Length: 365
Ligand SMILES: Cc1cc2nc3c(=O)[nH]c(=O)nc-3n(C[C@H](O)[C@H](O)[C@H](O)COP(=O)(O)OP(=O)(O)OC[C@H]3O[C@@H](n4cnc5c(N)ncnc54)[C@H](O)[C@@H]3O)c2cc1C
Image (cartoon, rainbow, N blue to C red; front, side, top):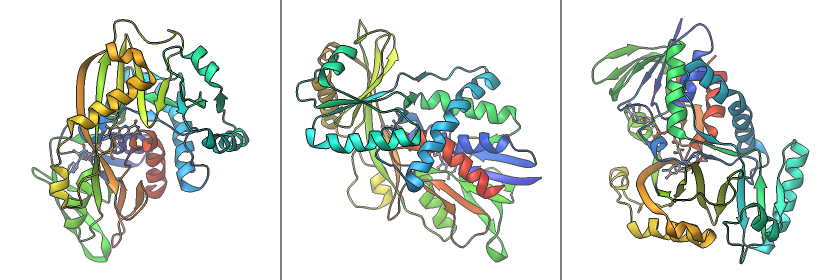
């Protein structure tokens, strides 16, 4: 049996664990310093923008497309295996376009997607008003509707991935920070040390998000993944917005409005870059309350009825963003023959977790 140790149990590590658990001949262990999904994953809105993204070729599109395809089977498969429901919104994503000069770019994307077998609809403002009467269309040039994109609750998903992997025999060592490694000759790492245990291993996957830099520094191959802060909020309205039978995720000026059902909505998120300081100082950066208020007001500008909503929750998270290379980082760690990085998913970790898991499986198996 090949022993594989995954470090980090956010949505990415959990997806890798689950995908590996479906293969025979592997003994998979997952370590996390906390409970599953407590890092960036806990803050995510889970909006999966694949078809509606402007990435049309190369790795960026391939990963999105692979995730989109895998999600179609993954969610029902996990629900059947674990009995745990995974909340999701499959009514599509509607993006409001405010600049008529962007319309040719959207039309060209629509054609490309058609050629790739996907649907993207360009709606006149009247059609936006008709389908979504809760949205204000002053200044809107078009609505771009992507029926195949969706949103999934990141916590439900991570918990189901963990439960599915555990059912398939994966060993979870939680509340155990990884603090060191045994590295032998010829770039091989033979064991992982947590504060409590030593785990002998044949291969390691680092899916530790913002824990990547300290761990790779221990391995003398520092890989810079820095934080970008995001804030979101939950609103409750006494009566749900728009038409009950059509509740897509709406995006305008990079602000998402995510219908959760029962008059509840997530709104977010801010994108706050830290000052260029040390990682420790960046990790300690504090959210600015007025930035979240700007997001709330921005959402109200698109959807005036949100002004009557009560804020029932607010939260903050840190997105893991690679420095000096593109997101995400899925590759061997330089200098080692049996350590792989699966990290730095920045703003798209929920979207890209299934494709990352497939890529890691193919690298390892
Ligand atoms: C406000 C906000 C909104 C977002 N919205 C979206 C969205 O709509 N769609 C989308 O796709 N993405 C979104 N994201 C981005 C998404 O959250 C991240 O890309 C994703 O969660 C990264 O997952 P991860 O598993 O790599 O990292 P994490 O969830 O951070 O997990 C890393 C894990 O590693 C563990 N760890 C670290 N160091 C160690 C160590 N030494 N030992 C043991 N364990 C360790 C941590 O405890 C943690 O559990 C959003 C992010 C934020 C902040």
